[in-house]
Amino acid sequence: MDETEGEVESGGKLVDVVLDEASISRSTPDVEHDRAVAIYDLIEENSFSPVGHPAGNFVLQLSVVEKKLVFAIADEDGEPLVTHVLSLTPLRKIVKDYDLICESYFEAIRHSTPSQIEAIDMGRRGVHNEGSEILMERLKGKVDVDMTTARRLFTLVYALHWKG
Image (cartoon, rainbow, N blue to C red; front, side, top):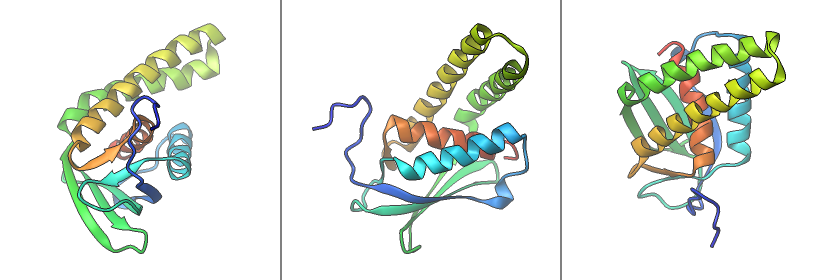
């Protein structure tokens, strides 16, 4: 048994993640970079298993529709399995806080000392973890994910929230 904190032994894995183009808008190069890295990292390593479905490879399409977060999950052949629609309300404040601290962080990278950057980054990671925990709680009973996967998904939720 794996003793990694927050590990989910699901056997399920995301093999592709698609962000709905209608749900996102162009943003800063820093956010675009974070979005691309999050998708790449998520595909490389994740634990993702829709509750009630056998372990397997899954494709996730994330979108924001009518101010709700939509997780459309399909099998690796594209056959739809389940769609979960989550209210963004529980995530709204944490996304706003994360947005503010990210702005401070990206500004600090350009103009601050390493110790100032490190302090802001520690705060940024703390807020990111908090958002990831909220997302895990919102997905509980719907999709089993570990903390690493939840962190990467939160990054994508944040990316969608720019327009949503």
